[in-house]
Length: 294
Image (cartoon, rainbow, N blue to C red; front, side, top):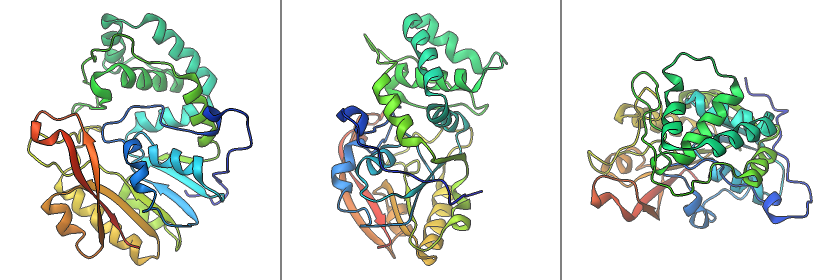
């Protein structure tokens, strides 16, 4: 249940830039860190509450937290329970998380990676901190930072080829923890957003993208793939939020489906770099769309 008392406060005056600025502590395919400069002109000038239903790496949230001039209320959602657990633990138990990540960093090897990856197949009961540290460790060491699971919800990405992977970034995790304090973080489906919306709220959607080609899609970050039906459902949610007077912003591929679904709204184009694609046509600099109702 959404509680108005959850406040996203401005960071207090502190001495170092790294503590004053938060950024993602997870790598995320399609993360928006590279697009923040282009997004600056697209954010609403002011809003009441902030909602991000596909949190992913959280680049937009951390950017807004670091740059906001007025307090706001924030709600971060996703239907990936392991991802949400990682954010909750980073918020509430950051020192315990760092301690377990130190162990992963010390023991990291190819065999260790696959031992950790198999933990969700071994029916071993992990604590919330152990689960979060596993998520961060696999994310920082797997191929291209992909989060992909099979139909049973088991993580199945191979280890990446990194000479010295950055597993523990203590200042980054601590800054992220500061940004997440008093933020509402829940496992929640995007279809429930209209029930939460009020006039003047700001919703930013960064869903799994509509694929440019049959081989260009990475939508299996939960056991249920995000398909064309879901894209159509999301477009209905976008329209419902708009009708309630919320500010709505959505990122997606520039495909005929997306252009058709949002043809009644303002559509801007941004230039993004894509490196993860089995089809060369989907790599390099490519146009993406940002859909706005304002």
